[in-house]
Amino acid sequence: MRSRSELMDAYLLSHRHPTNSTIHSICVPPIVFSTLALAWLVPIGHWIGLKGPLADVVNLATLASLPIGIYYLMLSV
Image (cartoon, rainbow, N blue to C red):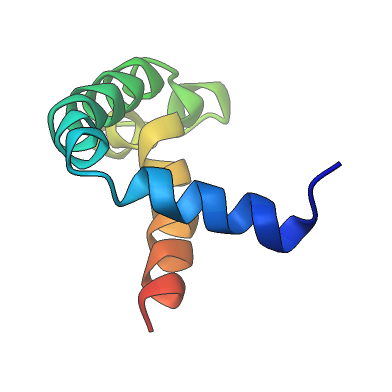
């Protein structure tokens, strides 16, 4: 069985390959967009009793985007 270090080296090598990088550049944005679009359809604001236009924008996408965005900002620092 390979060690963690060997597995990470293999992972890094494959993810730096130009073909893999190109595929990620093309495929990841539509995946993220479609996931957010589906999450937008989960009306959490209405479920918790919010009224008016605020209820329309409080959904799974907006609630999940904040902690996920903070997480990725922390990774980039």
